[in-house]
Length: 249
Image 1: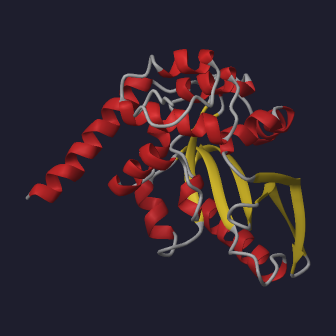
Image 2: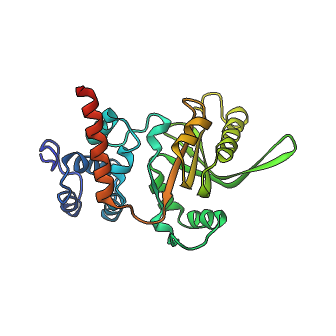
Image 3: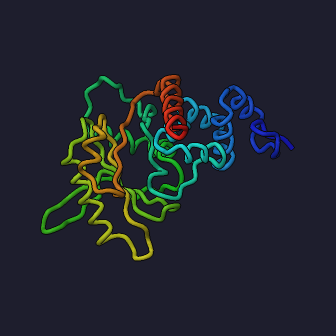
């Protein structure tokens, strides 16, 4: 009976997986990847990609201190809408160049072409339903870029793509999409619809002022390249120290 994190449970992964895990110095981060690789049956390549894309740090920076500790103890448990959000969402697998000129249609097409990898980046429980899903309201047509269903949360997840800085109009449009799905698409026993705006840049103050409290709408910046892992680790450590310091006062 052995586990590289605490010596208590049996081997569940290949030796190559454990060689990769043993290179991770932070025990909390190492435990997280071990749990996730086991639960989700990650291949070695997937484990390497998730580590290189700083999945642990991206999830942790979207949570409070208690939930960060839970990541290390239980992995990423999907219980509420905020659990599926990452900051940022990493789309390096699309092959789009950061400085190249591309449209929202180009971004959408690239995602559809690499849908399996995009689902992996989104996380657990996603089922793809439609691209450019049309609905008509008051004799006017509207189109949702990407529509998914999350079987763990039992709700629709609508994704809109924005290649520029996010505006309050974008947030208002997503609010309308979510309202429509909640009123006309979801079944009575399903949970409220989630809206995610994947954008090049966002202003947190604008997001907070535009959306009502406890809304099911989230903004996540996307990156077309792997993030700087050391920078994210430093940011996470500073945030944890701030949280801990606040409790000591």
